Length: 335
Image (cartoon, rainbow, N blue to C red):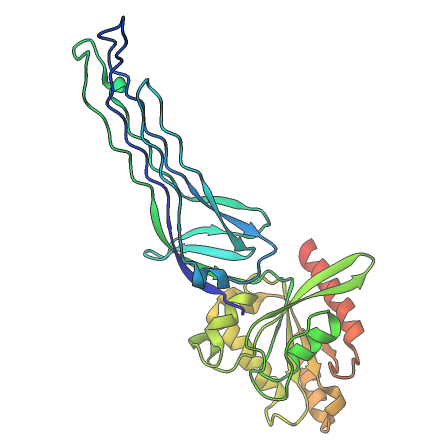
């Protein structure tokens, strides 16, 4: 199950308390204070792991706490420090303070590790408080509490290319055609309920990662359809493939489809509409009104948009599309 939002509670370990003790030996009747300090509480780290691709585990295990430090002992023996714990999250996870909304960490690289909650300092034992005035202090300190956070985890897929468009325009079929991904495919809207990632092999040891984003509809930025659940997954992409159904089966105008989705992206986040885009006219195998394709192609020329036509079902134009995308990605990196 793909889960891309979760709330968790983390607590670092409390520090151990200091000890009150005095050195008492046969020939040292007044050896002075010997209480040791308490150990430091364990820290809580979050670490990115590329073997994870969902936040599902946090739905069933939302609480994480590190062990406390051990209390100090006599003979000036300090307590043992609490063991640190590491909570692993998928690459692409954004971590926010649930109370304030402040971004605490953004995991964009494998093995990236961030200290989120610091363990409490151990309290001083009475040996720490000896002075020329007070040779036998009975003063000691309680260990400091560890930090506590309520966190909101938000997973944003890390992909080079994001496929956007209305439901049922062929996004899942396309990603299954050009990569090894095997998403659910059916002839009805909202078949894709979770994003799908696929690795596309360009050749000459070159690859790129493509994400099939569940279909958008008008009002998506306000949560209509699957809207807000998945719009964030295109934020990190370098390039967008805007897939448009040019067959007459939808009854919609291809140019209006493009304009509606572009508006939704821009309304959700201004810079999404500024990403490089390739308009892909899909389902040319079912084209019964050629003027629909010609009209869209002419519009793209006027708007200086890259345009390509394909049939994800038959494979027509898909190999060429892979190389067009690869070249466009190279241009993005160079710029």
